[in-house]
Length: 284
Ligand code: NAP
Image (cartoon, rainbow, N blue to C red; front, top):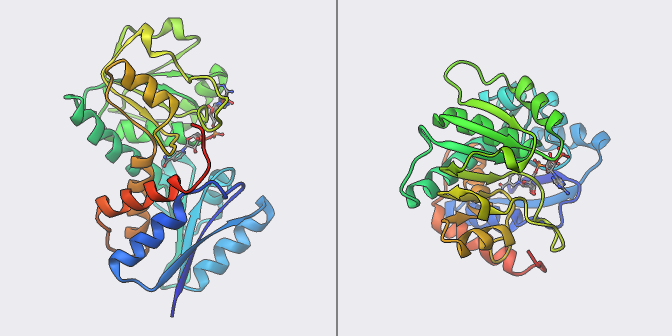
């Protein structure tokens, strides 16, 4: 029987996930299909339970990641810590289970980038832009990875303060500080991360001008067919940079592991996601 996995969100049309997961299932020789479905908040729970009951599952994207976490019967540590769910499935005993693979996906992508830049997450000084769902996954990932310090810069500093309070990163977590403007940023960071949605639209301003500080690496959670304007801005300054495609691919591998117990290789998935994006319009 062909199992069905669905990306639930609103909007979902821009997503490169169908090509990505089709490639993953093909690589593993697994009989499954992957679709996208635009759902309202009211439809979310019904759809998640329906797919799980059929033995499949799916992913959840904006704006439903936080409500999805509240609907689960079983949740991983990443869901408990972030309060957000982006991957769900049905268990053999009929429960609705969920994970937040953005956490592990981010950490893997960030580790690869910092290695390329000659540094590492452990002990790193990091600047995070944003205080939404992606920033929460990034902060939990940085705590797991052993970053030494994290500065957070968000358009609304009060939202960043609330995020820190709610995350309760706990003992051994990086020292975190909310900045009230770019002028409060330290001179030097091992890694700067854009976890805002700036860059999704061609007309967006840059999330941060990197000329004013010394950054050893830049990771953009946003992705585009040719990277993003911000990753190109970084690269033009000699800063190793990666867009959110690497994170997307890694979170997809972790989703497939949750569903099938096995991870597809990274290379062919990266190619499938790149080809999927190239087929879409985009001026990032
Ligand atoms: P979200 O919860 O809606 O948060 C949006 C963030 O962007 C907030 O910090 C918001 O600031 C900020 N922002 C929005 N418009 C802004 C503007 N005009 N100027 C300055 N700041 C602005 O969204 P999210 O779930 O965190 O997602 C953020 C981005 O990460 C999205 O582009 C998403 O596609 C991407 N993402 C990628 C992956 C991946 O696998 N690559 C995974 C997850 C998310 P305020 O708090 O002040 O509103």
